[in-house]
Image (tube, rainbow, N blue to C red; front, side, top):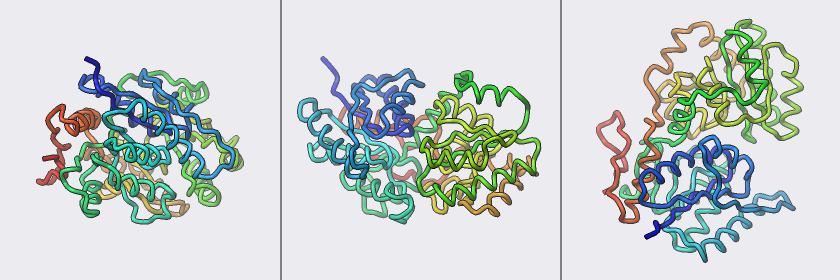
Length: 393
């Protein structure tokens, strides 16, 4: 007898990275058949990210962009998903995070009365304008979700504060930790020749810089890049690698400040294995990426978070990361303190990773099977506090 299908949908590279370990966990469990859908936001990047795990999309949505509005991909994906699920109805749909793809998948599934499982549920900044529109997306997804898989106890508490029943919430850890640990363990050579050459050239300390969020574009990015250029001038023993956002305006600003600067390598977006290896080798990471902020503690790498507000506060509370925004003075002061004191740097990440233990994908697969009556509910991710928030009854 064929297994019932569970459809996982991701439209961006971070979504694909976080969903890939879940697909593999479903296959290993053998209770449900995972079907990976590439949404219409960045299908080529989804395919590239999945390939790092030996996976490929089973179904790819096509979104024709004519107006460039946010409504355009949302409505196109909802329509295509509704048509698909009218003839190929899964037992459950898993959406990840807070993108347009996540919202489209959640709404289309809910309207078809298909249970929605929300991976990385419960993140909240408390500000609908930051990040925009992600904060709104994840709050809307929560309203139609049957099973909320929170990455941390704090995320679970956010959901409980919104009167989500505790029986519908499970703390799993974040699957980005699973993904990063699995890929880093393979110790793959760099695919990007420019990065490979830069890393082979010497034994300098590595600073990894990523700034891709729209809120960082323009003047904030200029301030960040200027501060990084100052760090390069101050410290002759550091190298900087910056995988730039592909948007022409962003790349132009990056090149205007850093192109040709000695010990700076600017590249196009990197394959996930290259990015993970860079993170694992970094002395310090400067980032506005949630995924990198969550994976960094697993490699003992402190993060300076280039945002004014972050919904991923656990690493801040644990002392694994520091919020500096785009303030050059704060960025220079915090980075210099860590560069001047290796002991301070090492102490910052000595306590492990608050975002996961590498078993989030297995918990996700079992929790989804439990929702459908196919397995017992898993235990929540162990946490230091006595109460294990959100364990299913």
